[in-house]
Length: 164
Image (cartoon, rainbow, N blue to C red; front, top):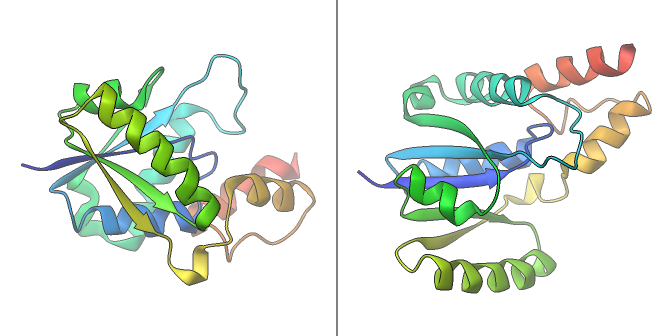
């Protein structure tokens, strides 16, 4: 069984994340999403809320994939978390050349740390290439409509969070 590990903060889950995640299932039998937990950062959504958003977004996009998805929290190196779940692939999404430069360096370092784990780059589809979680949070905070950038469950949660 081929297991892939897709790491990020997913705060919140965006259509860009979903684009990469859905295609990760084409190269792996199981995908473990690793939600990075950083003690010095305060995310907008709790770990449990982000897990719920990921699961709801997969169920909305393709319910047949739900049983092939694992979601875990991790601190520290993504390579170590990937190894702990038995992953042999690290999934990384690319939006543009800037991402590629950074991700190539990271892939080289990860390969040195864990030579048995390969990095797979999945370019974002053109229609979601511009989406970032940071911009989505900013638009939502200012009362803008984020429904074009995130799954429906996430849009509802953002609306409720900033309505307070």
